[in-house]
Length: 305
Image (tube, rainbow, N blue to C red; front, side):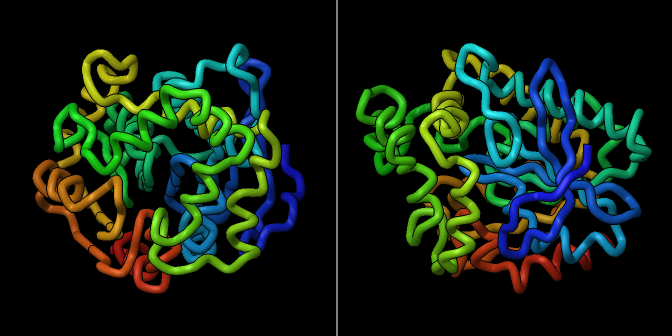
């Protein structure tokens, strides 16, 4: 069901929805050609991909969904939707099957573009359909157990405990939207400064407490070790990477990311040794914001090859 999207700067796209189990998932579907599937993470939405979609839609079919509970998708309460990695992968499976069966998208030759939680979601899905994905674009994400081991790094231990285990953390998430607000500021999610209207667009879909549940639940679902419910699926996602080691891969990386740090990048290099690497010393987690003028042309050239 197409329709106009609310006005956001740099996001001149038509809105579409895929309905499943009574929930509507919003997505962008622009251009023609080989499909490029773009998966955002937390606390983001398809707005993250706006520059890449504009750059690629003349030669590729750019598809960018909003995960359930995020962006312009429906935002169910905790009792209505499980908010787990497994649910996200099932959502993506159903959505992509719909695109192939009903929307004329070919079932081969896809490029999978991943950022943040898009990595484990995307690679767990790709492990189910290894013949569908021809190329990978990896942007500040992980799809394998933390190379630092199961212990949370000291710099992250206190904030993660606060956010995951305390009532104060719940208030910070739901009432004050602190996680998303900090993520759109330097030096937390970026090294540069977002224009005010762009930052407002990133935050706009989560305009009340009831619309912020997904942001909170993503943090609660981070798998640190075998005792966490999403751990087995993360391990399987990492194992699936071996099937893609000989396929074209581009890695674009902001080296000033406090979470997805250089150790994460080294692990990607180890698992995908033939990858083309673009690392930016002046970019943080939102590498497509800090380094878009260099990264977007690099991705476009990679896809043309």
